[in-house]
Length: 112
Image 1 (spheres, rainbow, N blue to C red):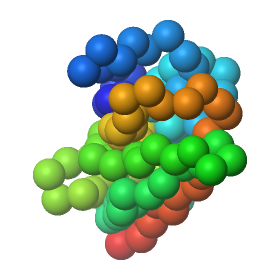
Image 2 (cartoon, rainbow, N blue to C red):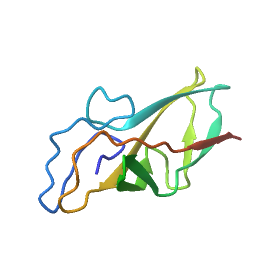
Image 3 (cartoon, rainbow, N blue to C red):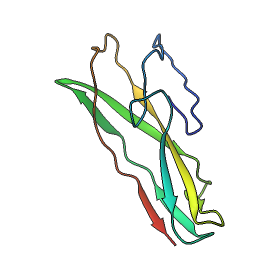
Image 4 (cartoon, helix red, strand yellow):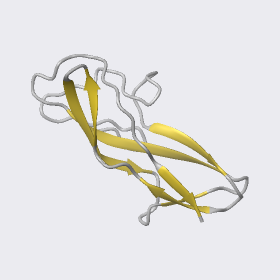
């Protein structure tokens, strides 16, 4: 798991020795810059679980988390900016094949 602050946890004999990010440059949460009217509140809807693929091999990404408050909201600052950090859990099977796994997800941000 990678949480929205970048902490990585593993279970079941998995080691976090590979790079896991949105950009592929290092391990950490996905980050997105939000811009709009100053001090505006935004509703954030996180993705449903989805599958990433490497050829015929698959893994599931789920348990998304973000730096939003309990109501799924984030507030833009006085200059109209906020950084949204997204973490998730990657389910790795026993004897998971090594490969370059790809997939995509949608995050919905609705400005109020």
